[in-house]
Structure formats: structure tokens, C-alpha cells
Amino acid sequence: MATASPAELQAELLQLIADAHTTNYLAAGAVTLAIVEFIGNFQDEVNLVWKSPRRISNAIYLWIRYFSLITVSIYTIFTFRVIKSDHTCRSFLLAEAVTASLIGTSADVILVLRVWILYGKSRRLLYIFVPVLIMEIIVE
Image 1: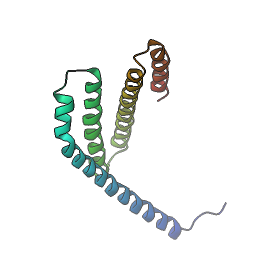
Image 2: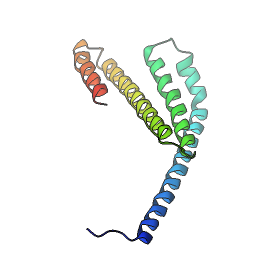
Image 3: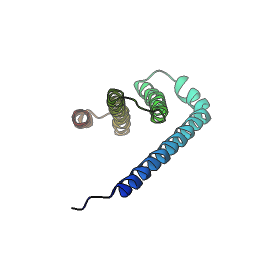
Image 4: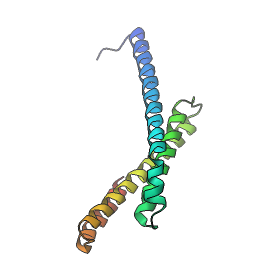
């Protein structure tokens, strides 16, 4: 296997840095769009969720909506910072993995609840969905 010359390695490194900057700017744009969407739909959310009777589905919806928005905003802000230590980088990656799992699991719970309600709150369906959901959480 041939090794790359220093000039080729430097060009590749510069391309990786440029790609990382592009990715960060796209992420910032996506978060901005999410915030605009959040503001635009806030009145509907107040009318349909906040003013309705308290239900587990409303709580999970609000959890996903707010926790996701806050988490993604923090991720995006963090990507524009210079990371000065391996410990900080590892801590951030661990927090990112944990929060991504929480968001994914919360979305799955909402989907299970919706399908369960759609099929008339069948216990038999719950006996299928709950173990599958637990296995997914374990695998994550």
C-alpha cells in the first residue's frame, strides 16, 4: 500500500476542515428553521396541548418537542466551540449519545401509544409492543 505524500495529506486535512465547517453551518441553519417552526406553531400548541386535559401523550409530546429543541441547540452551539481537551470531547460525545437515545426512545413510545390507541387499546398488542420497545432500549 502506497503512503500519501505530505502535500496530499495536508490537502485532505484542509478538505475535512472545510467539510466540518459546512456541516456546522448547515446544522445552525437547521436549528434556526426548527426555532422558526417552533415559534410559528406555538399558538396551535397552546390551544391543542397546553389547554387540553393532562395526558401522558401530551407530556411525552412536550418532552420530545422541548428537550429535542434544547438539546439540538446546545449541540450546535458546542460544535462552534474549540474543544481543548479529550475529556471535554468524550463528555460531550457521551452526553450526545445519551440524549439521542432518550429522544429516540421517547418518539418510539409515542408511536407505540398511537398504534395501540388506533387498534382500540388492545392488550394483546401491548404484549407485543412493550417487549419490542424494551428490547430496542436495551440494544440502543
